[in-house]
Length: 351
Image 1 (cartoon, rainbow, N blue to C red):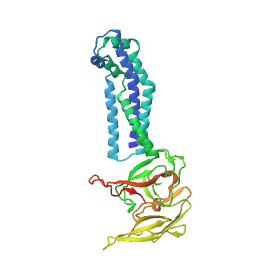
Image 2 (image 1 turned 90 degrees about the vertical axis):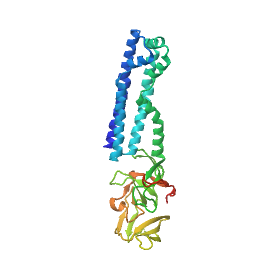
Image 3 (image 1 turned 30 degrees about the horizontal axis):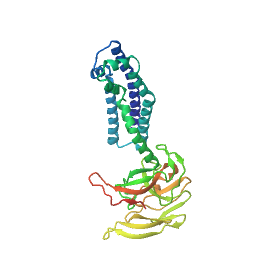
Image 4 (image 1 turned 120 degrees about the vertical axis):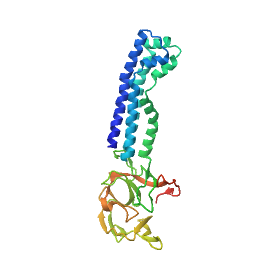
């Protein structure tokens, strides 16, 4: 719904602005020509009031309300794809700015510098000529906003799509490595450069390694997930009695603590994932059962560090290479809710 509304509002914006420039400028030209032909004595303010099409402001207001309605739908429905939003809005702003520069700017300048209208403005509205000339040749609000925002949007799009992207951890599935409320940075080029929205890889850079903390789309959901890469293509994954075996080799586990000490509910364990050490949690009162699977070519087996409280490949299957988003590499802030102050105590690299 939210994405569809975005496309509709974007199309309406482009159509309304085009009509304003084509039909509106023609009406303005006709009004100024009439004043020139009849040698109307006007000051700049009264001439603008008389010549400017009255529907320009109302259509601009309509577009503003449409964008406000779309933003309200994002807040209320809490849906939508931010990558799609950024691509669509950047493309819309760029297209409007480009069309205005290539076609409409020249028409606006010609209107006030050539022919009988130019003579009329220069010699009849002498006192206000420069000010009037600037107002008649300026961009309409839609194009002005597009031109102002496009460079910023383009920079954000490039950085977010090909360099790094921020995420917030929404669940406890990666505790103790990542906590709910952690804000992390994801490297978007570690596993190859991909087109935004489409996800098509356009440049090979590297492949996921065992132990990486990776952001991806699971096969059953359109939302971002974050888990640890446990199995690479061709690996045999066995999970038995809460111990992990890869290709028949046990991943060494060292018990660090039982928490809380007097009535322990979970264990904090250091796991050596084939040379990559990291912390995991085991719930003492939970048994998720045993598991065995061979990772298919072009797929990855993902598991959460909170082993007994994680929805991962044991439930919804392996992650195809095309669903990869990037490698999580750093925590830059912790902010659990708006009722709390942000904290920077957890800032650092992700193990």
